[in-house]
Image (cartoon, rainbow over all chains, first blue to last red; front, side, top):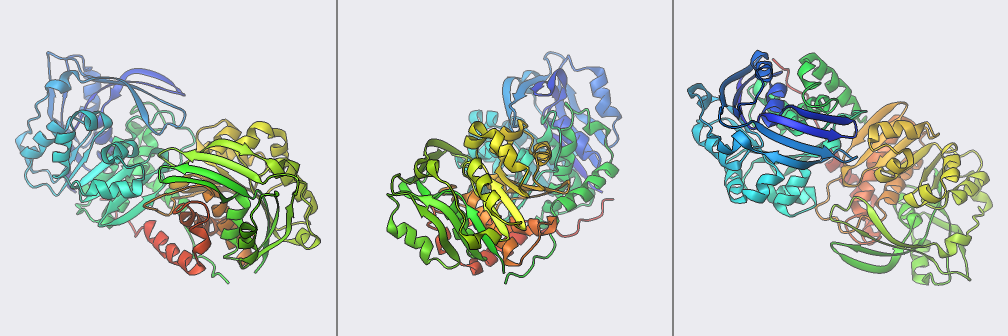
Length: 310
Length: 310
């Protein structure tokens, strides 16, 4: 079993969906990623919180099995990163109402020495400048993945393009892929994006599942069906946690066949997150529950041999 | 090999997409359905054209293998049905700019006597009142399927609900399903729709493929990937033609396993239609080309056994 290094945001979210509203709950890409991936292997966290981050919220991560917080800093002069958003009826893409970078704006990631040799590195959604800073401090990781968002595509495109040249796996949602490539057809857009550098691209499509592109081949599957999607926030980071957790659990290289299953695990993990607000559902599940959904998922996509046409 | 009866619209479409604009080209649900299904088996057409329908356009259907037009009427006093629409960048749902029912508004479908015993009946998108009229004239078909659209959900809801009680298979796109059930989650919405009567429901999701619900089970797969979607008009009817063509080709009952493959054929057929305006691409393809895409499609969704988690 290997280990993962993740850098990203840790913060407080205020979220409104058609199932209700929650204020200032634990969120941020790192929280979702780490909770998801920690079911599979050890996750080393690099990040920053502000002076208003609750001890109980910090203890949640600290006490969780497989999470190492020695890379987490506290900025006593700033507040914690905050995000506020809502979802329309379809729930496939968040509408950002407000982003307060706070402590993240002054963040200067420094990796504790043991973190520099972690083989699986995920640069969760955060300023590409910071993602690059982390990348400069690691020593030949086996797989480097990154996520981004519209906010950075708008404000830090040069740095993002620099980053894309240095990563193996880009994980991006469909709207962001469109913005990055100016192409509304995901099939051709991933080809365009792959020319920007990444060996593999996973397009997250919300309730429609994902599209994986690697070695000029496509692999496309649906999401795990959920009757009641309460809050999709963090689903993408949870998905990434499943992808990296699966790869790192068995020390796998980045091949198309390995990534296929990694993405299926990503779907399964994300299907728990969306069933409740924030981390409420995800934090409670076990790997056994994930494995049970895997069996149901295989039924969902199972095809027997076709009849021969006459 | 069995036969299909289809009733629906035959008309002229004016379509604008980001790949161009075409004016008054051959269209209507029946044209797409019949051209698609005729690759698999004989299709008997019930419909009406007006006094402006071109002889060359009629000859196209007449001369095509496996299409019987003895149920097609010409109304000398009215113009042909016309639809005008456009697509936004994502191409997943048409925006109707104008619908002129013309001859369809005065249509009174009467089935030629041999048509009354055809085992596979598809009631393509047309006034639910006319769909019911056709249904009253057929004699215990093996499978009855129907499509509808927002226009009828708005204007003929009672008749549509009456129809839903009498059909086996509802084929509907995602936006229409939302409108019919007032539920934006497709997973729960198909359950609601199935309580309205149909044994099976196929939700057409454009570039995201389809969702099949039958016997309280879900089957979900992606669309066949297309690099350049020129015009999605008729994709849903083409899909339905593939579904019914596959079922009728080998005299299949409506079971979940049969419908799964029928839907895969639906996807494959639709993937040709969207590659050019109107029927331009679909009319040229052969069953061999469909079978080649089937092989590629199976690669697209193929998963080996997963590694065991440690």
